[in-house]
Image (tube, helix red, strand yellow):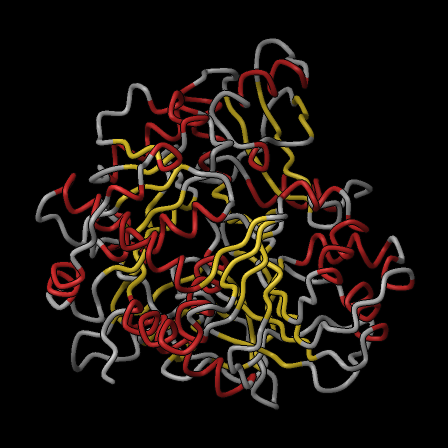
Length: 511
């Protein structure tokens, strides 16, 4: 069967796993057959509402629950990409996203619909839908899907933008096919996987978990975000649900290691652990590695602009505690270029900017050609024909053995709590939108994993002043933890705020 759309995979999976459980969430569950039936009804409803619309984002404003999975797949049945949003996002930020993306509709619940009262798009309240009254025309759904090709959008993921409005990264079906094909072969996925899904639905990790469900027939166990604050209960959930595969951001894994919980709670079913999104300190990683000797561990790397991840490193021998873990080698159909300041290819051991080419690249930023053009550029090593690369802004070098080592950011983009944050957006909002201070500079303290704000102003503001104002426009993970007033922010020779000096000051306070 030739597969153009990820739903082609899902249809094949249904034929083989119809009555198996597809998704579990606390005491609720849904089979693959039921998931297909309800998703098709959502797709049919959306076709009635949006008419002939295809390849236009439809937003999902739901908590992480079974209805969110139904909504995402239902949107796919309508032949449109889904755009998951965090229900904890401040209203102003949500409005900015809608103004930029202009989705064709939004799926939400009665509880959260009030937040969208001034959003001028059709609203589907999924927990008020009379599913029994919806008649599905499978022929019409299939006919619509046959209009699409594999490079059409699968989903949009919003990421921080320097001007205060998030950027909508567009990922297509073909790039996920590539990622799944390599992952299935390298890690022997066969549909017996039970995924412990902890990432928010706005993460690309959740999109991968959907692909595991659709393409392989793997089961997803949805884990509530609040469990991250109760690591022991989180591990008990893994054990109770016989979870054998997790793909998590390292932060919670570091906490579990520091608390010694792997000595107290057995995880006999856990056979594969992936982690990505930020650096996993080797000391804490070794706690997991030593306590779970029969588990395979893999470190993955990739920004949102790459379909999930572009490199991976399988830990096949115990690493040295004093050395960081490599981010590994490129995925199939992906090439990693390390370029120096002169846009020349770096030699072994030479540090340069990590750039990516291949089918894993995102299609760009939705309704944002300027930002797209600045990040997705012509490959400087190829002057013969058009070839796009994505410049990650990350610094890395290659070892003699071919493994790539991550070194950090070259600009103001950071990874914090698994989220990619543009520090310039924090500064822009504080200075220009809220006008809280005259000048400011946000930097990242890597050891304590804190955002530090240095500011220059006529009067001093309290932490409460900042938090009260910022909580109205930013999600909690974007609000700085430390606020430091300076008589004057340092400037470099061209008059700009000296970010490097402040970054060094935050990370080396004794100097």
